Length: 132
Image 1: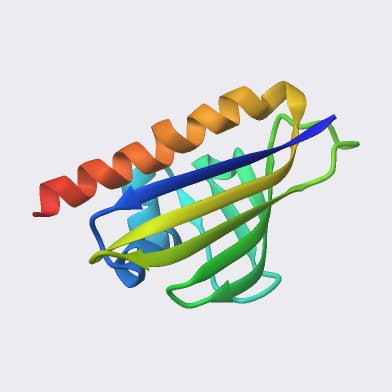
Image 2 (image 1 turned 90 degrees about the vertical axis):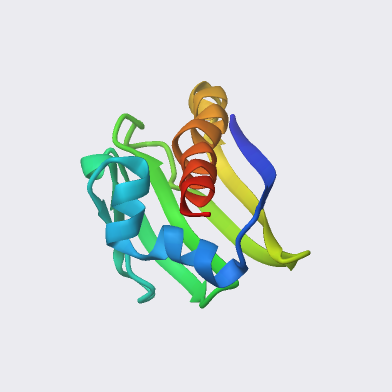
């Protein structure tokens, strides 16, 4: 059975700058500490952590939304790709990031749920704090 993971996280940074954390391959790689490939071109390949995470870009609206397929290298071939949606909402001089990650295999859901916090949101907040 597949699960949906939903998270809302607030950042003290405008949406455009936060959007860049994910969409700039060099900055993305710096923040997660691993090789990353990402482009806003629909159909282009996405990968992070040296290919342990991979997918394709489906839809990007600059500074507002990112939609991509997403899967771990350890997923069975019979398991469908998940769909990741990131929405960047401006809130009080900052951003409320809404993340919806659908079709996550149940056996990986708890780790992926925590992984978003540990490997993305936490490093992003540390980077923001250091930059101030």
